[in-house]
Amino acid sequence: MGVDMIRNHSLMAITAISFLLSYLLTPLIRDLFLRMGIIDRPDGERKIHTHAVPRVGGISITFSYVAAYGVLLLLPWRADSTVAQELPFIGKLLPAAALIFATGLLDDIFGLRPWQKLAGQIAGASVAIWAGVEIGTLAGHTVPAGWSTLLTIAWLVGCTNAFNLIDGLDGLASGMGLFATLTTFVAAILHGNDTLALATLPLAGCLLGFLRYNFNPASVFLGDSGSLPIGFLLGCYGVIWSQKSATLLGMTAPLMAMAIPLLDTGLAIIRRWLRGAPIFGADRSHIHHKLLDKGLTQRRVVLLLYLACGVYAALSLLQSMTEHNFGGAIVVLFCVVTWLGLQHLGYIEFGVAGRAVFGGALRRIIHGQIALLTRERELSQCRSNDECWRILLALSADFGFSGTRARLNGGDYSRFSGRLTAEDCWQIHVPLPRGDYVHLFRRFDSPVQPGVLMPLVGLLRENLAARLDQWRPETEPAVDSRQTDLASLLGLMKGIEAFQPASREQELGTLSRD
Image 1 (tube, rainbow, N blue to C red):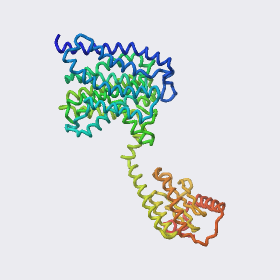
Image 2: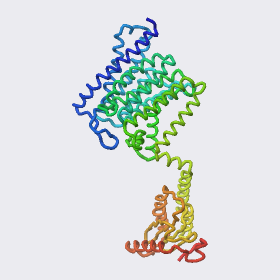
Image 3: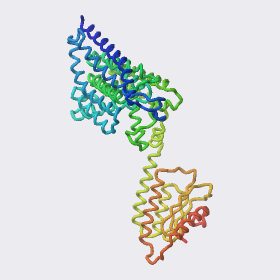
């Protein structure tokens, strides 16, 4: 029997074995854990299934994946050098996958804290590096050993969590895992990588057998015991895939094959950072949630994302085969397709961030913060009420206020720019101790910087009040707090009523004091 025929028989046999084991074991394990009560209950928000479902489908996938190699060793052609040479490497990789599986299973049954899950994933990635899964080159250059280790751990942990985060609809993570696994297998065949081919096909068989019970309506979920090992193994496959490529685009083909889970993870991190939410927290803004919000059913969302996986898989294989000729163009096409898809999803966070960066809002925020710090420093150095009033006028001009009225140590000041009516503007009244106050007027049609309004009020309330106390007359009689509140209220009423400048000097912006 020829070497190629033996290899093909081995691949077909191990795929069939893994499929049958997964297909037969999944309902048995599902029913067992259903009786044990280890289930995922719907919450009507993120968990949109209608009834309790066991969440330990990863047990059947992991067992079937490992057992398939054991059965292969019992077959007559197991001693052939083609197969025998590849199995030791895969055997060294299995302990790493076992660590990831154990981490996920403990989380499914007992619940782990984020740092505990991360520790387990880093441990698994470290074992994988020991087995030989390491990103040794990047952009055609050899990566130093320390950086290579950090880069590999980051990649493997990222892939592991990507499939965990995308596991939000029936059949979504398992189906995407199947697409990515088959894509990697085809690449292995095209590049003659027998190790990668022998490692990927059993996982494809396991996922296909499991998908029978996981597709909508699902009777069993992957759970972390399934989604974490799938993402981890695919991350390892991606490194093995790229090890034969020393070009700039070497890692892009594996990245394209897992584009949607990795993209969803990256979007989740950026979204939560922009919102100031916990990075490891949960939300309902993943890609599949956004598609559900557009009115699509669960099945249509999953099928649509399967289609997207197919497109990315095709681009991945094209890039892998033609990276020296058209690889750059394919990467550009990949980016364009991804950008159009994100635009259709309509994430608010990225629209706001884009306007902030490209629309001038970020520059205005920086300008506002600089102005606040500058005026705060000036207030700390001023030595009289009049000097303090000039700083208030400068601060008012910095932020586009159309009028300013203040009482500083009992002295009244005001200045208006142009003619104002009550219908033209909104106002901020900041009461200060002993009846003093600052009252600001701003036209409705002027641009606003919401991010500096509260710091501005804090500056006036704390820094200005403290400075006024430093030159307040020591012989000033004590003021009843009720009188203070009344004086502040009268100042507010005065500011509301007196929109028109009282004199030509005020209209021209000169200083006046009662």
